[in-house]
Image (cartoon, rainbow, N blue to C red):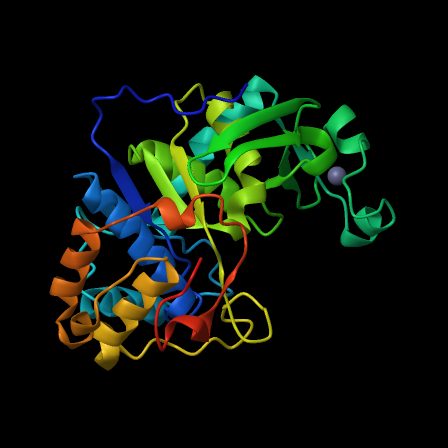
Length: 311
Ligand SMILES: [Zn+2]
């Protein structure tokens, strides 16, 4: 069984919010930030912010600044300095070297066309006959073992999965040289001593893959809590691709009370007139995970605007 949570009980809670700077924060990303912040503070823990800026083609330095300014405007003060993954290449490269020596990754020159011809899954030949001296640009893939396993989400309970059937050999470094999310997220969560991860349910299915990396690195896995996604009226997850509107920082109090409602909290009406710090303090003092337990449906963005969301 993948470790449920390997940290000693006395270890201080360390949580984090780790956005990709592909655009400004929107109502959905605020909900994720607020949930991780409140859970950390309610446990007397620390809360870090990390920029997952691994893809310069999709990201901009302005977006990172904008996100940080937006968090500050909402009173979401982080501990320690903000980490930028774009500055972590040496650590990722070192990890890849270790994995290469351990035989858990292999080079892959397959084209999209070849993958499509194989129902989108990676064919076995690169894995079985790795060519580390290819003159072509290669991606590096992680060789996923074939086994059934389970793990426990703090909110959603036991999760069962079959590794190779559900998760293809995934890329850890792309042909263009960019490091993949899975490599970087686990490497930095370990390096930063993160004990608790509160994030959106879009990442639930990827968690077994992250647990596999913890296991490979013989590191204790964090506790995971996957929270409901925020969707627009068409049922699409709020995202930059779906043109989710940027948060209006001048309405920080409204946004925060709304985010609390989306998380099933019951902020009193007078809180709407409070400043962000007071709203967050109320959120910490009254943080209740129970509305999120077993809640696997998305919540609709506008539902919380004029009252409480009944999760
Ligand atoms: Zn291949």
